[in-house]
Image (cartoon, rainbow, N blue to C red; front, side):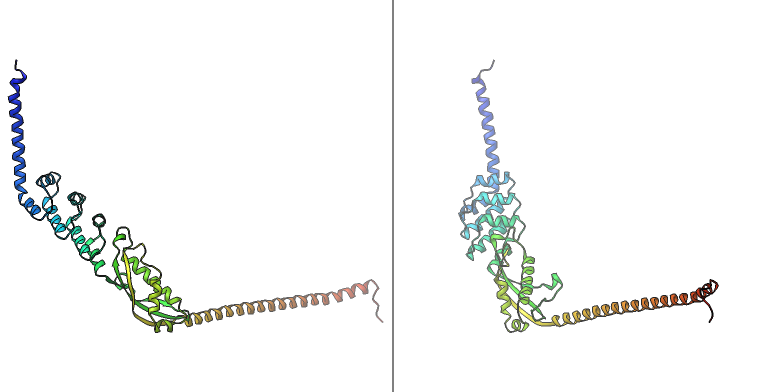
Amino acid sequence: MQTMEDLWPVVAFAIGGIGILLGIVFLALFARYFKLWIQAFSSRAKIGPLALVFMSLRKVKPSVIVDTKIMAVQAGLTDIPTQAFEAHYLAGGNVHRVVHALIVAHRARIDLDWDTASAIDLAGRNIISAVETSVDPKVIDCPDPKKSGRPTLDGVAKDGIQLKARARVTVRTNLSQLVGGATEETIIARVGEGIVSAIGSCESHKEVLANPSVIARNVLDRGLDSQTSFSIVSIDIADIDVGENIGARLRVDQAEADMRIAQALAEERRAEAVASEQEMIATTQENQAKVVLAEAEIPLAMADSFQEGNLRAI
């Protein structure tokens, strides 16, 4: 019967074999990622060889993490842990795009952290385009003929004159509200509504033509960019033209309507008069018939009286 001392060499040999096998596997994996480790080490990215091996086991592409971490460190973004890069990669995000956006924001001194940038990327928004728009504001046509099919915004001043306006809205991205904030279409709709309302509040169309900036100031004071993904920098009236005299047309339409109502009332009164006349004619004819009937009864009454001796010839 074998004792424990007899089995110990076998156990030690098995353990040693397993250790050698694991060592060979580790060396093979390390040799595979040795170049990446050298790159990370030389650029102070602080990614160890074990981390590279474990990345491959977690189905994370080490080359993506190393490249983006080196980009971030070289740009001065040294406070982002490697685990954050891996977590975003495993969540299906674009790590390279997020790091690129963070570098642009860092160089432009825009307040943007990793959590906000990664959330924007996972939400399906183009984080690079958002940061670029925050650095370099873009101009939106209001209205946009390609989307609304209308070339101008039409408003009517209090004097009844229609004004046709086109505006250009300069906006920059509001990164803090990019996730969940309203989109560009909302900005266009709100600005269009504000311009039409501002024109309608003016006493005369001449006031708007003389100083179109009145409309822009009125619209800006309303805070139309609240709860949206953008901050309105300025609103400029690109063009404004005089349209129809809506007030005069409405007065003409009202006069025509009043005339038709008067004609209808007159026709109603005429019909009533004709009906009353016909009733009087019918009443007259009825009375005439009664007279004729009464006259027809006179001879009969005279005959009866004569027969009864009440009527005698003189």
